Amino acid sequence: MSIFEKKKIVLEIQTDRLYRVAQTYFPDITLSDSYIWDKVRAAERQVEQDLRVYLEPVVVLPEVTPQEERDALDAAGTRWIEEPGYDWHPEFFQGNKWGFIGTRARPIISVDYLKFVYPIAGNTIFEVPDQWIRLDKKYGQIRLLPAGTLVSAPLNSYIMSVMGGGLTVPHILMLRYTVGIKDAFDEYPNVVDAIKKLAVLKIIEDEFLPSSSSISADGLSENISIDTDKYEEKIERIIDNARDEIHGIRMIAL
Image (tube, rainbow, N blue to C red; front, side, top):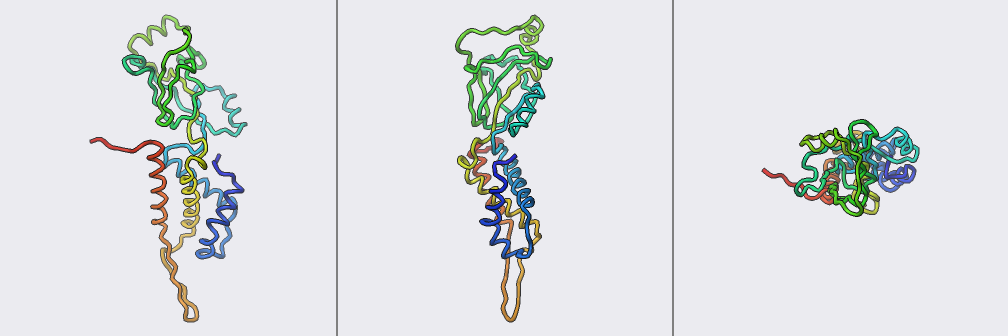
């Protein structure tokens, strides 16, 4: 899956971004549409990894999700990933915790549900009401603020003894949510531009061009040079600035 439409981006790379480069450095080589598309996808994935964020909405499924739900997402062309549940800690509601959960992926777009599911798959103890959930979407933080009508959970004596006995229960909190960037073209056009630049750079690197060369004919000479490292540094600066905007300023405490 990609934020780009294949035919549109391939045509743009061919006509707007690669034409002058190809005419200068490899005029006799014809690049196929599939080859250019592969480079765009590789560049897109690299930028996702560098930013540590998905460039499109991605549904995060808990490990207990039935296979039919996964098949339905596949059929709809929706990108999804799976993650394990979150642990229950004795201090989950103590002090100022307020049921704090730091999600593994961020930024959050929406939360579908948060359930307490005791180890047997599908054995839901309690589904947290939507109005209880408070989000810090940018930093992937969830807190629970009980509100509204009184609710009850079907807790048996064993579960009560485990959850109330000062024990940590692994993978009991099942969270389904959607993360990523809703519209990268509108929210981060600089990132989209960096992907296109990086795709062209990958094509150039595949040609194994020398850093400099000269052409002489009938007393005329022309020097041609290309320094891909400088172009790569410019792309890295764009990505670094976007990363700080998405995740916040990075710091190290010693």
